[in-house]
Amino acid sequence: MAQDIQAARIGILCWETGQVPRGLVQLESLVGNSTNPASYQYPVRFKPVFGANVHTILENPDPGVLRAMIGDARDMVADGIRAITTSCGFNAIFQHELAAAVDAPVFTSSLLQVPLVQRILGPESEICVITANAGALRAEHLAAVGIGSTAGLHVLGLEECPEWNRIFAQPDADVDLAVIEREIIGTALQAVERYPATRAFVLECTDLPPFSALIRRHSGLPVLDFISMVNYLHSSL
Image 1 (tube, rainbow, N blue to C red):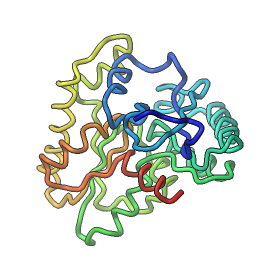
Image 2 (spheres, rainbow, N blue to C red; image 1 turned 90 degrees about the vertical axis):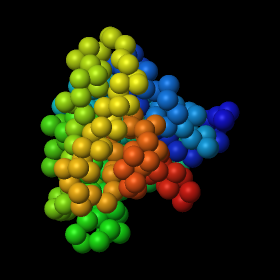
Image 3 (cartoon, rainbow, N blue to C red; image 1 turned 180 degrees about the horizontal axis):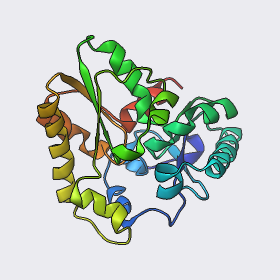
């Protein structure tokens, strides 16, 4: 749909222009990706944040980048944006600081949906989180978005998938999106096999929503992702 950014209610803080690996640029072409305007049935406004990249967000969260995000978020709100989100789920670690600093709702990561899913499922049910990198998703990220208990919560990372890992190991190289699709679906099915009490998926990575429908189809389970979160919050504005 044509985007009228002047009518946008939600602002999306993104990685710095030119700092996105080639493979992620390819993924951005898919409808459902957080930085593809066609993923939304309403206008949104994107704001690249100076210094935000895989190293300063995913690998080593940088307080300097957080300050830049706060400044950009405040500017967007002053310009009429009514809620702020981000294009990387690992910004979960900044949830408290951003929400405290910005005079508008802030929802940094689809992981904010995990406590909701924990409450609406039965007490013996389990949840699988699929993330870009399980080793980088630390207890601090989970605590920052209100995940008080990790009982029954299983985190599966895509870093062990060869084609997905090429995105970060070879940031200037193209990747095969069809192979990445198979790796993502295979990870989800492996989760169901390994954890048969799983009753829902939450996708941390904002590059994964284009594959949510396939995960639902193959697993038969609910899938919550970045787009489901943004749609929910947009409906409240």
